[in-house]
Amino acid sequence: MSNQENQINILLMKYRFAMQMLETEIAIFMQEFQMKHGYNPVEHNKVRMKSKRSILEKLERKGYDYTASNILKYIDDVVGVRIVCSFLTDVYDIVNIFRYSQNLIIKEEKDYIKYPKETGYSSYHLIVLVPIDLQTGIEYMDCEIQIRTIAMDFWASLDHKIAYKFKEMIPDEVKKEMYEYSMIMKQLDKKMLTLNETVHKYKGQNKKEFSI
Image: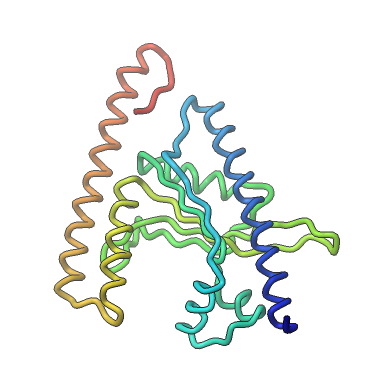
């Protein structure tokens, strides 16, 4: 095994540690939220780590060699988390949980909900620094967190598949239609939020927290 391969393997081991740490943090956050508010805002979440092949392909697309230093410098989503919520307000509640975390450090935020991509893609992205406690000391690893509603997640899946079919540039006609349909999904999110608020109003008569 070459020295470069060894360095990459050591780096990927650190990312695995960061992924485990992040999974634990999220589980604690959600349990605490449920205890305080009486419901869990997360429909489901998925944690994944890119394969060596995926990392290599992403570096090649960016024009960089497959080295440990380039992985650290140019790829911030080796570890990725997708958190899917029922309602739009839940997304921002979860963002605030990460914002006030004592362990995680937010390095970058992108609000694609307020400012969607030109195809209409919506989601809230965070790049967080996750601490891993090694014998040599604490190191921080970049991890990406995507937080979105069920409707946004459905749209993101279609957005990804359509973008994959067009290896180069997505035609303007397709972009326009994608954006129009994304606005329909956005209206659905607003209607579902209104419905949830109506349910809360009636359940509030019993002074109980409730969420559909």
